[in-house]
Image 1 (tube, rainbow over the protein chains, first blue to last red):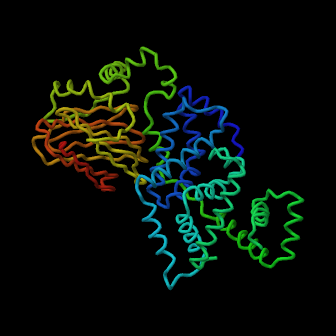
Image 2: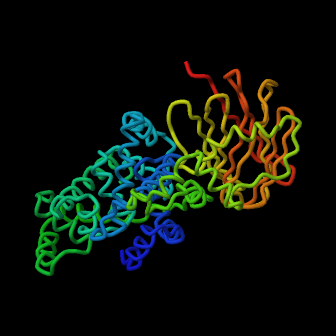
Image 3: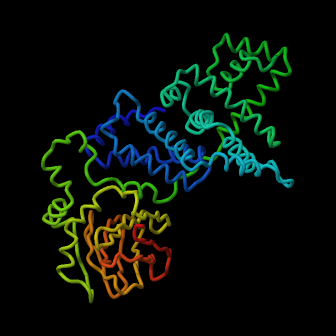
Length: 179
Length: 256
């Protein structure tokens, strides 16, 4: 998570430098999209969230706190937007039903693709607060300290939430016969 | 108990590579004594490996360009200098339009060959062109759609303002793309056209049909006169090298 140039780029963005913003966009487009996708399990929604996140970043550049690292700001917006999206669309229940059906096929083979799909399905079955720490840790590669910064919670809570999330995922995967 | 909090903490810390040497020794002792703990360690390790191995997807093509194209045109620093009188003047739609027009390079009208266009029609749009310098809005009476093809991507929005319908094209294309906007209602007529950000616009208008060519990043506004405030469907056909690559439509329904 060594991004020494982010701060300088942000300083340029605040002065109205669109090129600097484009550099940040290039740097963070993929992780933001992946985080949104893992939170929502829908490529179209992930694309829309990615667009919303960067527009919000641009519109609120003046609210950026330079003492905060850029990635923690942008990841926090990503997770919040994803969670708000889920709430807005009232999709949590529907997704639970969808994903519950996905692992029940008699012909299911435990190949890599299906394990990956099963993992995503299991992710969609756990609460968003747990999903968020899994996404930060395993999709975005954040450390405990970085997760703590993004979610603005103590590291102790990060650990406890992460351990619980893994246990819940393990249970879901066992239910699906994938672990 | 393998799943007591202390064992779970040690296992998770080990998996995450943050275990202390004392913790590591404690964990090894636990694992040596407990097949249950061994199984749990193996399960969690496999889980973490699977999570780390989730495919890292590429963002959709053109997403970056779509985002860049949809950024507000005003500099981001504007909110830090809210008292800037000149900036606030330019932000007013009509004056913004006038300033842009005076600059001579940001608004282009070219190749207009219409049987319906009048100079007075162009005059009508002076208070409205500023709308295309703002972020694509979302709200009542505004219809928006995302285009996300490999040849062309971005947003098209439709709104009304008095007797005018404003179709805002905020697009980026990988090559030359023709956009044909057609409408069957003969009471609607082409009222004007504006472009921001780039030179070389090409547009032609005929009865019930306007054709625009884009290449690269473009921001166009198309103005249609809809005096009767009628419900209108505008068909949008995107063509590359004479071949249709995308067909869609955007609709205006009168309020209420």
